[in-house]
Structures are given as structure tokens and as C-alpha cells.
Length: 274
Image (cartoon, rainbow, N blue to C red; front, side):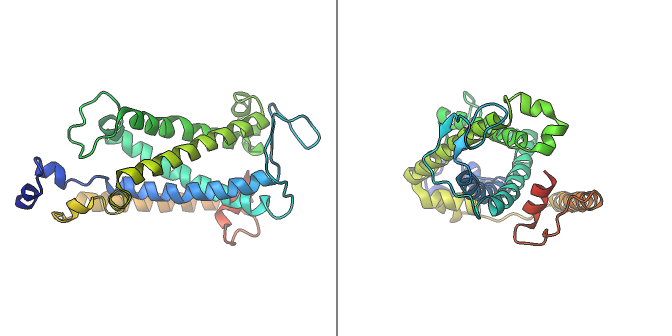
């Protein structure tokens, strides 16, 4: 606390708390990698047919809603693009699900993102537009892009036709998917720009280590409790067991393609199943 006092910190205990929890940091970087995978593969898929339609069907030679100013590349794009897109999408979905459940269970969204609340415990406050934009991304844009992506799957559409009907058809879902993706890219650009203005190195350090440079000088590591270790172990075991069960079910119903051992094996399997 003496060190905190020398740094001019009025509340040493609040100062010593991590700016971001370990789960927030881990899910943030996994989502970041998955998002860039989605972006790269999405562009590859789009180049195979850079036209958008509205309704159930749409092909070359039929009227389009939007003709994107992109080259038409019919060879070598959509294959690896689909594999990587599915792989990145599931990584993003599962990571996002963990983050949302944790955020609801720990009141993270209520305490840190809801506007018009007392956030005096936060070391550096987010303003109301920032909070609203984060909430919109988590609870509106990401669910919408996931649902429209699922609506483009013929297999899922045959089981859940309402998923396609609610968006007005397969091609309508694809068009909505495209524009929501653009909104997410816009959010990313604004987010990175604001991070740069606020101090890029300090913000990135906080998202990696949990603390800013000033906090690092007074950081006192705490021991992991037995409860946390047991909880983490149970979570890892449950996740591994769930993956094993899914793999056996997929193998039983011939949902695993012959080339599942490639670089994008999981993505190939999910693409094959859908």
C-alpha cells in the first residue's frame, strides 16, 4: 500500500485488482484469433460469388440485390474458406458462450457494462456509448451473425425451417450475415482506434497480464485457492468428456469426412456434417 500511496492512488485495494480477469483476457484473445479467421475465410467465400440476393434463391443470371465490386474467383477459394470459416465460427461460438455465461453468473455485465450505474470501483471508466456498443456486440450482433450463419446450412434448415423463414430465406440470411459482419468489422476498427488513443501498449498489456504498467510495479501475486483448482479441473474434464462424446456420435452417424485429419480437420468435419 505504501507503494500505491507513492503513486498517488487513493484506493490501493481497487488499484491492485486486475483490470481484466483471466477469463475475460483468455476469451478476448481466442475471439480475436477466431474473428480474423472468420474475416479471411469470409472474404474467400465471398469472392466465389460476390453478389447478394433477397429471398430463398439467387444464382448467377438472376437479379441481385447488391453486386459487390469484387472479382469473381471460382477456383480454389470456397473449399478452404468454408473449412476455416466453420472452424473459426465454432471457436468463436463456444468461447462466446463461456464468456456470456460467466458474465451473467458473476454479474460482470451488470457491474461493468450497464449504463447509469455506479462504476466508481472501475479504475478507468467506459463512457455510456462504449458500454452500449459492447452490449450491442455481445447480445445483438454476435447472436444475429450466428443465427444467420446457421440459417444458411441446408442440414439445419431441414431440421429447423423456422430459422430460415424468420430471415426471409437462405439468401436473405446470407445478405444479413454480410452486413452484420461489416458492422462487426466497423466496431473492431473503432475499438482499436480508441485503444490507440487511450494508450495502446498499456491497454494491450492489461489485456495480456491483467494489469497496466503502473499496477505491475505494486503487483502482489496471490495463491490459487483449492476451490479454483478443483473447479478448473472439473471444467476441463467436463469439456474433454463432452468433446469425446460428440466425436463418438459423429463417427457413429458417418459425420466425419475421410479427410478429417487435415489442417482444418475440425472445420472440414463441421462443414461435411452441415
